[in-house]
Image (cartoon, rainbow, N blue to C red; front, side, top):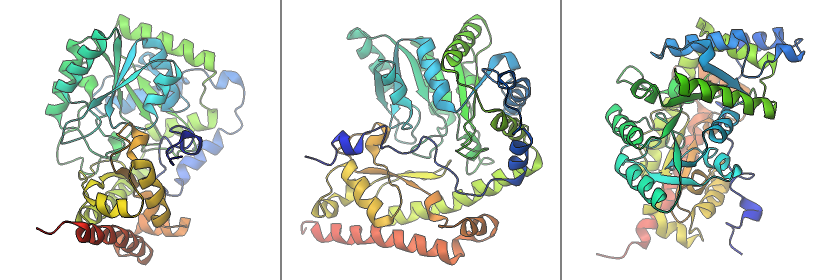
Length: 418
């Protein structure tokens, strides 16, 4: 029996966590906001869809990013997965997702008995379908009797860590609009952009405001992953109002409330006071530096990877090292996940977790896992002006380079003579 058998490696129960943590200590001001609300336990303090303070803070957050938003166009839930589940149920029809995509997107469609059709991404980025591939997929699905209604995409992408160029995004949004699709834009990672001052990050909601719902999980940039909270911004107008009401109905049926202490911390974070913005800036800078070093090590070994531009992960294609991996009994993404995870001592989810081909030798590598084993080491990384020079981070990078360099050397020995 192959190790890809779902009994031991199922795509959901055994897959990667929906949103990897940044690995850093909780900001003291966030802890204080959480603790101050810890005594609130009555149901009326935990309204479905979020209380006034959280909805107002969410509106301000989006307005500062160029998306005019009123509280009645916002809903909050205990994590982006609950919001995506409600949106998928409310919109009906079949779902389209880029390939690869975040590991948690497709399971919600399957849970509701909906097909999730993958669409190839352009060469320069992930997260956004290639517009021509999107049109062809919609045509094929309809020809086979399907009913595609929802496209989920992400400008700042997990798993690839890339940011879609505005021109690519515009073409995809135009194609989706022409086919009458509703878009859910997962913007969880937009505030973890490594170089926000070099170019512009656009939301599909700026291009197609009447047909785009924006979802942001606060674990991407603002809250620890163990404090589940997410916000959704709905389109203005009759269609958006109806969708908002239906989503609230579904969240009510699920009793999907944000715990009041977490909601208080979320509202504090979304107001973006100085302690929050300073920590976010430092965290993004740290993960960007580690991501660049990780990318350099992977590419130097002969693997392929787009330069990471957001988040705290890198998506690597080890196809060029296939001969060396085959000699070690690694022939697919699940076997690669097991092999690299054991060698590196860290989670290395294979590309099949993200809807990629099982036979492709692709993995997502996390920068968080390189920051140290203790809270003290990770805090030192955050505070150091030169974190890559810290001994424990240097050791982690040297160990990773050694693994990849050994694979490169073995692959070269397996190459046929010219």
